[in-house]
Amino acid sequence: MKRKTWLKKSILILSVFMACLLLYPQFGFADTLFAYVGDGMKNPMDRIGIVFEEKYGIEVKCNYAGSPVLLKQIEQRRDGDCYMPGSIAYINEAKKKGFVDYEKPVAYHTPAIAVFKENPAKIGVLKDLTKPGLKIALGDPKICAIGRVTNKILEKNEIHDEVWKNVVSTAKSPSDLATYLYMRLADVTITWKSSLFGTADKVDIIEIPEEQNCIKVIPIGRLTFSKNKEMAKKFVDFVVSDEGKKIFKECGFVTY
Image (cartoon, rainbow, N blue to C red; front, top):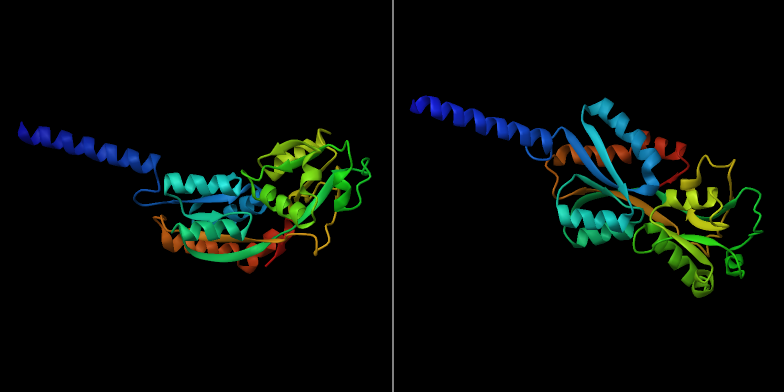
């Protein structure tokens, strides 16, 4: 009788343990890599995840959001394998907090002015964003990297307050900024040039001169919480490999 009871308890414990492994693959024998990735890198990272899985037999799941939002998630959850923000400043913050123990630079994030096709608002230079009556959409500096960088550009060129008088919408991601433009809810925005790749039929891009711009480096780092550190390192190295950078180039990025 005691043996049967012991056997039933053992089976129950084993069943619970196996269920935990299925529900939470980060605990135990991880067969999934989990990466926190800035929204602006979705196109290349979706492709890289597929290629990496084909090579190494491990699935890559990416959580896309604004870089500061992702950093808060990492701080709260204290799990996952990699962090890829839209600017090196965020990975430096993560390192200070002890969240990242291995990192590599990947590509450049270049801000640009975007207007609806054929430029009905007649925007030519950064200063034109101060024109009264203009409808501007900008990234929220508290939520996404492009928002924080845009503020730095405006401050650098001493037009911050004038431009913000024309802001009618703020967005949590580069894709949202493009949507505001497509739907004609805004005349102009500032976003990552790479986020506009493949939109030539809808959008005109106006380059910001380098001396007026704030070009950022996109990094990727391994999280100290990773339960599969060797594979997480391989993923970081694969992203910055020739094969990984080729995918970034094909998605409109300039690689590091």
